[in-house]
Amino acid sequence: MRENDGAKRRRAQSLGRLAESQCVATLREAGWSILARRFRCGRGVEAGEIDLIARQGHLIAFIEVKARDSLEAALAAVSPRQRARIAQSADVFLQGQPELAACDCRFDVMVLLPGCPPHHVADAWRVGD
View 1 (cartoon, rainbow, N blue to C red):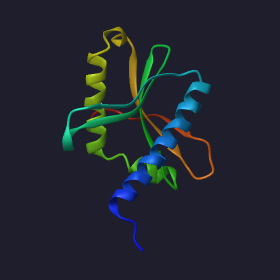
View 2: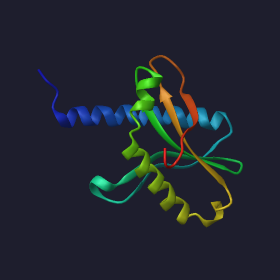
View 3: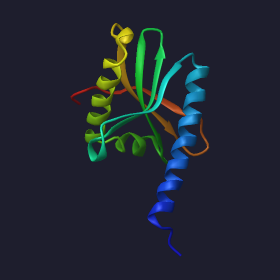
């Protein structure tokens, strides 16, 4: 018996929330403050979402979380279109936080591989890549 699309979506969302929670714990242990989880802007197909926004000193990291079987698969899963939407969402977030204007920003990916702690890929891409 095949699982319906709704059940698959709920299972994927549940896995995503668990992965995000594990990444939050790892970031906090490394001295990061979590500014936002699942930050959304826009609506419908054009909506952008940033899984985690974290700060350490004067650095803000906009972090995409991926649970995959390999690091390569996780990094490949962040498409150019998704990168653009994340960057647009980052701009919206920063516009609403003028006290962060002097901070440096980067785009990271955190990957959960089976049986491993989260792997943090710092500066995974830059706008325009």
